[in-house]
Length: 124
Image 1 (cartoon, rainbow, N blue to C red):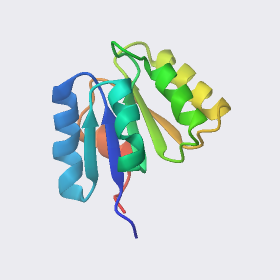
Image 2 (image 1 turned 120 degrees about the vertical axis):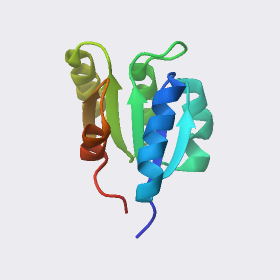
Image 3 (image 1 turned 90 degrees about the vertical axis):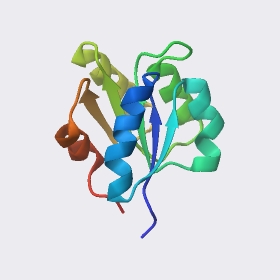
Image 4 (image 1 turned 45 degrees about the vertical axis):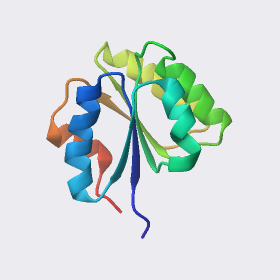
């Protein structure tokens, strides 16, 4: 089975490193990005199977990234995370579903290892 490729997009670099430190030992290939523009630049070459997307970032917010992903036929599982009100992530999940991104989960920040593992699922 193909290796799972996790593309993390969060402007908090420490959170990205935390996710990488949890996911890589489990067999995930991880690419860290810190902006929506960075995600777009790396998307095609990395070909993610899972995207962990923060909703609030300085250049493009998560909704803008979701629209871009939908326009580009994203088939990766999408995990939307936010430290703001949970409804913010719920609304983004509805947008993603409406725009054809089929597998969407949400994650409330801050989160620990168990919550991360629950949304990632087993690698491979």
